[in-house]
Length: 342
Image (cartoon, one colour):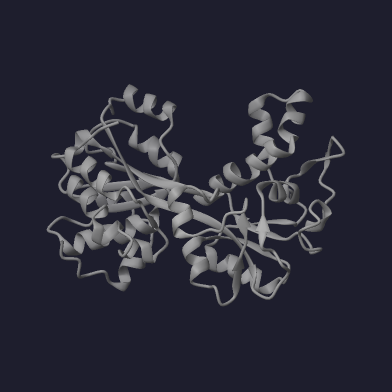
């Protein structure tokens, strides 16, 4: 593949009006805001380096993208759904009910979120999920009782952590990374402390207890960041005790000002994220409507272009912008070539 036109404009990530795809001579993509930057890079490069029109890439979130994907088959429905999680069984069922029965699952690669603070700030070097739950949950276990969170310092519940004010800058609820933070940090911490069981023992249903585990305190100790990682970095820079949640690639580009902590004893790296050893990592996906292959110009070609070694490999442009390349990339390429459905 000749990959020659990755221009600066490729990195201009913006929502594209659905009206631009009215003619349906191009691929339509929607879904995860986490996958959006990668899909936007690929879409523009695809348009510039092939004879096909540039795909239309929209965001909206994984769930919203999959809901649109499952609306049915036909030119008035999208061709590809981006997702920062695997498609759920109920979504597969909804797709089938609407006639979307042949779905190709493409694992793009992996990403991970890291916990970083000022390089010369307090010694935040090692965390567990329990630490973050105890720091941010509105309700915590103290002496076996669920109480309103009394903790103001990290050392209040873990003597190995600094005696520093709790001040965490976390992804806002509109971000795809918020879901992985909730499920792989807060929920696990809630379970491991026994708080979730205490909630159910107190009469909560399992679903209600899980929802409670994912909530965060609203007294200023936990701050939602609705912007990108540069906003998180600015907040950490301005607060000596602040800890921010970042993508691995962003942290690696700012090691002159940030230091990263281990999570559960594992240091975040490309290797530990790709193997799943680092606990706050996840695979990223897109889903192809197989019935549209051969109908929508360039659909299969777009998928193949996206997952080519030159694009999604460890030395490709997506890796430069934070994607951890999938060690099983060749298997994914074969799945697309063979149009292998779920």
